[in-house]
Amino acid sequence: MGRDLTRVPLVPRKSGAAARDAGFSGTTPYTAADPTIDTMSGFLPSNRAVDAEILPNRDRATARARDLVRNNGWAAGAVSKEVDSVIGANFRPLLKPDWRALGLSAEWAREFKEEVEGHWRSYAQDPRFLADTTRAQTVPQMFGTAYRTYLVEGEAIALVNWRRARPTKTTMRLVDPDLLCNPQDMPDRAQLRGGIEISRDGIAKAYHFRQAHAETTWVDIADRWAWKRIARETPHGRPQVIHFFDKTRDGQTRGISRLAPIVERLRMEDHYSRVELQAAVINAVLAAFIKSPMGPDVIDELFAEGGGEGFLKYQEARQGFYGNSGGVKVGGARVQALYPNDEIGMVQTARPAAQYADFESAVLRNIASGLGISYEQLASDWSKTNYSSARAAMIEIWRGWSARRTAFAQGFCQPFFMAWLEEKILDGHIALPSGAPDFHAFWPAYARAKWIGPGKGFVDPVKEAKAAAMRVALGLSTLEEEAAELTGTDYADNMEQIKGEIAAMPEGTLHPMQESFAKLLGHNGGPQMTPED
Image 1 (cartoon, one colour):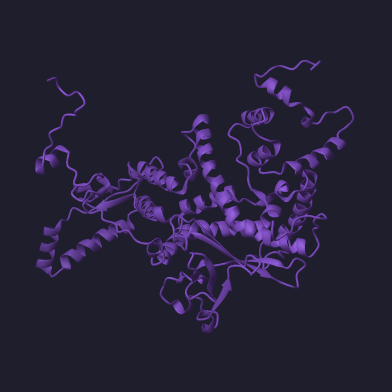
Image 2: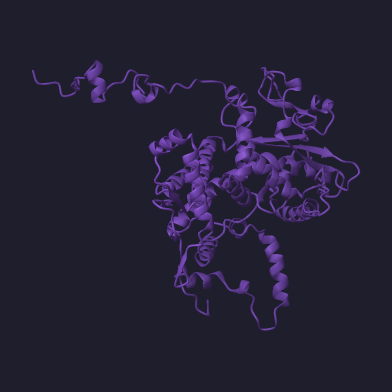
C-alpha cells in the first residue's frame, strides 16, 4: 500500500536533563507557567483579589510617591508636564446637548449652549472663588489639583456641597484621599473596604471620611477619631461624592498611584545622581594633597624609641615649615617649597563616571515609558530628535493624554457640571423651552459636553495649519474640532472675536480669516483657484 500522506510524522523529543539542556523542556503548555525553568523558578507571585493587592500596600506606595514628587526633580517635572498638558489653566466644557434625543431643534441647541457656557464661565472663573467650598481656587484650578492627586496618589475625591449663602449654592470641596478610611480603622470586610460601603451588586453606595488627618497635631484628638458617612448621591441622583480612579480589575475599590511601577527606578536614579554629585563636589574641593614619605614601619619605630616623642617632633617640624614658608617667586609666580622627602599628589577628577550618562538615560527611558511620555519630554533633551521622530512621539503621547483627559472629564468633572446645571435649571436661571422633556429623565442629554484643555501644539506650525485646513476641506474634521485640538480654544468664541476684529479693520484691508481655504490648499500643492472660481 502507498504511504499515508495525511499522517504527520512524530518528532522525537528528548527527556529529562537532555531536554532541558537542549531548550525543549516544557512541563506546562505555557512557558510563563513552567516552574522548572531556571529564569522563572523564583518568580512565583500569587493570585489575589484586586483589593487584597492594593489596600494593604496603598498607604506606603502613596507615601513613597509623594516623597519622590516632593524631592525628585524628574518625578516633579513629569507630574507637572502631564497636569499642564491634560488639564492646563482653563479646563472647561464645550456643551453639546443631544437635541435629537431630546426632540428639540439644532437652533435651540446652539442657543442653549451659548447660554449655559456663559453662566459656567462666570461661575467657574470667578476670582472670588465662590465655587470652591474653601474659597481657595477657581474650578479649573480645582480640576488641576484633583488630577495631580489622581496622578500621584491614584485617585481624586471631591464632595459636592450646598452652601445657601452663596449666589450659586453648588460648590466643590476637594478631599485628601487619606481621609477616606474605615471607621475606627476597622479591618476591611465584604461590604466595607477602604472606607467605602459596597452593595451586593458591587456599587459604592456610601463613603466614610475621617474628620481630621490621623497625623494632624493642631486639631482636637477627638476629630481624628470621628468619621462622617456621606451617601454617594441623593435619592434623585444628584452626586454628593465624586471618586475617580483607574479601575483595572473587577472588584477594585480604591486606586493606586500611577507612579507605583516606577518608584524603584526613580529611587535608584535619585540615589545614583546624589552619589555622583557628592563625589564631584569632594573632588573639586580636594584637588591636591601632600604625601609624606613615612610609612607604618617608620612610625612604629619612632613611637618605640621615644614613646611617641620622635613622631610628634617630626610632625611639629613639618607643620612649622608649611606654616612659615612663603615659597619662592619666579617671574611673579609662586613656587611652593616642600618639606624634605614630601611629594605632591593630585586627586583624579573623572566625574561623572563614564557610564553615568548611559545609566541615567536608560533609567529615564524606563520612567518615561511608565508615565506614558517620551524620554525627550521627561529629560527635556531634544538634541537627537528630528521632525519625524518628534511628530511620531507627539501623536503617540497625545493619544494617551487624550484618553486620560476624556476619562477624567467623564469620571470627575462631568458629575460636578451636571450638579451645577441641575441647580441652574431648577432655580430658573436657565430656562427650558415649553414642552421640553423632563430634565431629570434626560439629565445626561441636557448636560452632554466635550471637555477641552490645552491644545496639542505644533512641531511645525505651517505644516500643521495646512493639514488642519485640508482635513476640514475634505470633511474629515470640523473647525470646532481643529480649534479645540490644536490650540485648545472654542471655535464659536474665536468667531465672535474675529467678527469684532473684521469690523475694526481699516477700509479696504482684509482680515487673514477672509482668505479662502481653497487658496490655502493651492499653496499646499492642491488645485490652484482662478479668479473666476
